[in-house]
Picture (cartoon, rainbow, N blue to C red):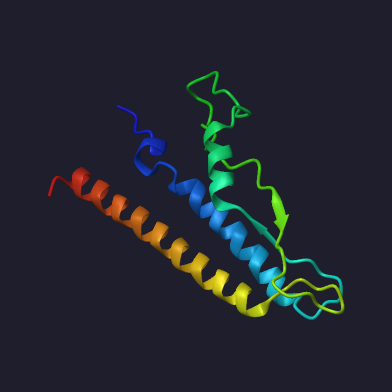
Length: 130
């Protein structure tokens, strides 16, 4: 009986991809904190996952020999972060806010990895019959 990894890991595969993209955006924001006119960008984690779950633009697997396509969040709409205080040079990066957002995202990324790791250990235990 073939094992469907989507049933085992659920939304966590997509969550890792979204978290990685979010970390990349936040790192870019921090790196451009002194760039005049730079606008801080972010993605809404919940919106991206909601769009990924309802995304019907996936390819169909028409033959059992085809490699199945994992559902990736296709729509990662980047939004501009609204600055708390205006900057004279037009830069909207708040380094304290970005650092806190980066830490929060990293913590959530790690939690998702731990969940997947626990699932893998459970599967390995089941396969070994221990």
